[in-house]
Amino acid sequence: MSKTATELKAEILRLTREYSALTHQNNRPGYEKNQIARPKFVPGQTVVPYAGRVFSEDEVEAAVSATLDFWLTLGPEGDAFEAELAKFLKVKKSILVNSGSSANLVAISSLTSAKLGERQLKPGDEVITVAAGFPTTVAPILQNHLVPVFIDNDPVTLNGRVDQLEAAYVPGKTKAVMMAHTLGNPFELAAVTEFCKKHNLWLIEDNCDALGCRYDGQLTGTFGDLSTQSFYPPHHLTMGEGGAVNVIRDMKLKVLVESFRDWGRDCWCASGKDNTCNKRFGWKLGELPEGYDHKYIYSHLGYNLKPLDPQAAIGRKQLDKLPDFIQARMDNWTTLRTGLADLEEFFEFHLPTHATGWSPKGFTWDSTGHKTECSWFGFMMLVKPTAPFSRRDFVRGLDAAKIGNRMLFGGNLLRQPAFVTLKQQQPDAFRVIGDLKGADRIMNESVFVGTYPGLTPEMLGYMIETMHTLVKKS
Ligand SMILES: Cc1ncc(COP(=O)(O)O)c(C=O)c1O
Image (cartoon, rainbow, N blue to C red; front, side, top):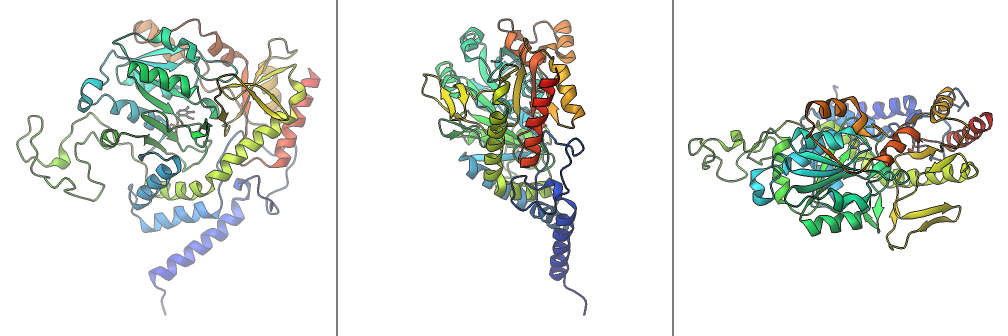
């Protein structure tokens, strides 16, 4: 007798799990006790990535299942993921997009909507941001004809120097702050939220590298007006490509974010639905004839930045693992920090915002009373100028030993070709506060290695041992 579709699907999914269990052993969480099937770790030969996809049969099954259903465009899995992420973060709404860069673009674009009245961001308005970091935290500011105003980074926390905020502020011009919780380290949210409140500014938290980090016990990405996530593989959870905009409190922003994501449309019907507003043919907007189909009315110059539904299906399985992933990043950082404690002569190690020092007993904290908990995106260190080796020697040594390493993304972004050209062609396109010495130090001296949940105890031990060998050789 021939099989039913349900029976066939169940068989395909059973085989999918079997296949994945055989072929994806290297992608399993490194903290799993049972690593029997993982290929043996060979020091110097096995690559120790700085980051990567960590998943099990669950994600592969979810992807195949959603693909067999063939809904394809954002649909039931997307709705469920959005609800689950919003619940995790305790925000009003999470809206999926196809990358963290798209999330940043959509977030700031939504604040340019005329529907915001007096609070609309208009061309020439200034947005305070940070010099060293990832380029697409900043590019969307310029793409919206706004003026980024760069403050410096603290080279040890990597975050924006909040003591420069008032110097960056220009009454009537400054309208928003948009910056990242760098590498899983929350920026000084107490000072930044107070500053934004005092001057009635929008706050967008780029939370792409910091899902699961906390400031005074509260998750980052839940303090401002909007926040953003990336689900590209090195991030705290992945769906291949992907991202989200979180609407933290004000649901008025939800419709604007969705509009910019979905072609700029005025209609807010979910995909495949009609007439949610109950007056599909009853609107009179712009100079269109009365009753023009609301589905094709555009109140913004938007984009189409939606991911696919199978991506969301993968993301849902990753969300189940997220608490363990968050903890693994913290544990891996502590293992590395403890193992490298005797190398302080050569390296200045990353510190959480508000921490003043680290010892095997834990962190010491500044007098503000604020504390941070970091689910680290990476283990960052600055090679001290007094070290008998250069940052370049050190990263070459790591590379030769097959230990993945990265610099802090674009370093001081203003030294990137794109910004040098912009400055030449449009000198007023951005403003800079101070000399950006911190951003330059990050660019010149910093390197980070992995903390991601795929690292096994053997890999962490090898990283520590290799760094000692490299330092001794110098
Ligand atoms: C702070 C920050 N913002 C935004 C992004 C962009 O995310 P995506 O690569 O998903 O576009 C990244 C990328 O890693 C990032 O580190």
